[in-house]
Length: 179
Image (cartoon, rainbow, N blue to C red; front, side, top):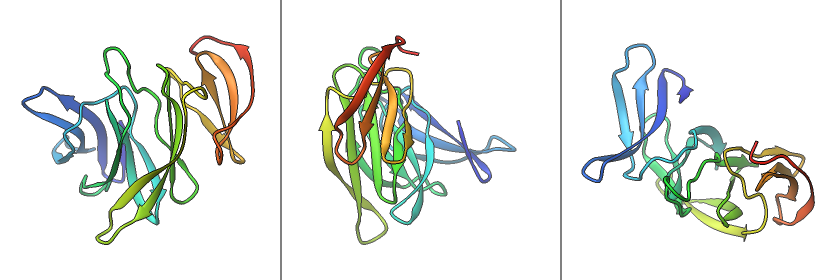
């Protein structure tokens, strides 16, 4: 769960008949404040970020990544990030990069990608892929760490460093399994 001011935000999911991507509850009373999206939940936790000059909750769903307004749940942007929770799951969090970019990674041959958010009228954004590299930062169960323009993480269990601006591998060493 993620706490933002007075609400607890959590990925929900559900059945085909009633599916909700993310919901917010009053952190003191448990009263439902809002629900948003219709995607199945993944194994990644929601994350608060400031992107495009706007506070938003980053959510990695079973088959997409989205940004939501923390006060209403409104979907601000979304892009496909294929996966099936029972076999090809999305487990790593989306990571904010700079003022308007989102980094995402996963195992199962997907690798890593960097998206840029472009502001649109009405306060929403379009997400444009800057690069996608299937052979770098194939994270599984773990997340990456960003530092000085580089992403560090376990890629198929091997420690790896990637330049965020280009997606190019800088180095890879050490076998640690999946963390």
